[in-house]
Length: 277
Image (cartoon, rainbow, N blue to C red; front, side, top):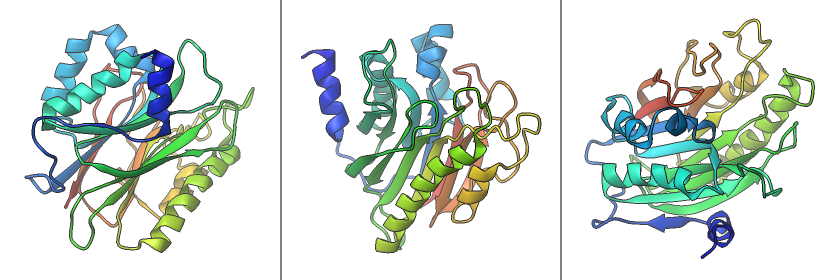
């Protein structure tokens, strides 16, 4: 099967593989660990090595055993990049499910970028939300995971990547907020239909604000905080240059802990949130 054909199937829907044992809808620890990570087109593996990055994810206490990986800037035309994270999930839980799609329909680039959500829980529904074009094409993925908790049997998870610039405008705050509004409206429409289901919105929000004031909460963050809680309420850099670009927002769940893990595995730091189930 050619790479193009494989990726075409990948983009059409959920591609799921399971290990030797069946997946449980509830982890043994009754904790849900979510990691949001911009892979920077595989930069960490290029700078270090695949075994080194794998060891980091598997042995760093704040990352190990993640149940959900929300990934941005994955080169989906390089099968090795996504496969690396599928192996991490398979190794941690003996099972993995995933949904991935391109950010743009304009394929054939050196790196055809997209997002992916990799899960230890079965994916029962999934889709792609194409965002308004602000500079480059951007998208948000969503999946419903079969996770049991008090009063619910699934969790909705988004992985998004908002624009960092629009042509010569390096602070497109208002236009970026328009992209965010699409995701918020999509999530709220889902919540109106299924008020019992928790929602997690994760990803690279590119919230650089005014550039000169990294700790300022730009419009995107303000909009999300109207409807969701931020896992990291105070400023925490998630980028090599001290900006808080990456976030995990949530509703309907109890947060136990959240933080960013500083390590040279990308130009972004992984952001982690542990939720009680």
